[in-house]
Length: 212
Image (cartoon, rainbow, N blue to C red; front, side, top):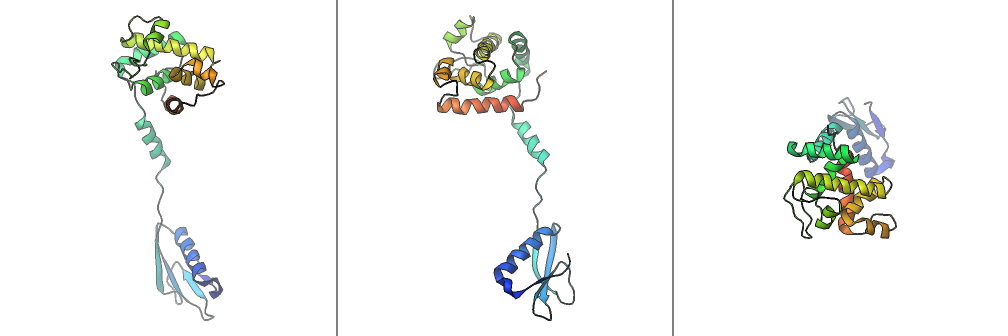
């Protein structure tokens, strides 16, 4: 950096701001030297010379973490599919024409892959099906992991068809029921649980690696 002259008319605040700018523009570790010229102006320099001989500030610039590190952190935090459930997800995906990643996202949020999960309202299994919903879509053993995934996926396929492949509305209806979505004007119902549920499922769905 070449020496810079700062006129006294800038005052103390102006000098401080300029010094800070100079410090941030240097390498990670750098010093700023200062002194006064024959005309009385303040001299700033990144190197010591006959005029600027006093160390005024030592600047250290924070180097931002690589973006890739944040991407790796996000991927590491995503839920994974237990190997024993993968065949059932693939079967449901093929049978009902639903991306494996979407089925995975719903299971992750519904039960976190706990086949014995039971909600306070009585929803059961990996995809948290109410007994009436399980019966409606042909399940005779809601506690069985394979049947639970197949039945939940069949219901999800029905919702996708009902809402013209609108994934957001289908997910909202999976949580709140199709009647609630219709009543809300084909929008996500203003239920706190559903408002939280939909973006969570969509986030996992969009970030999940392809399940093959």
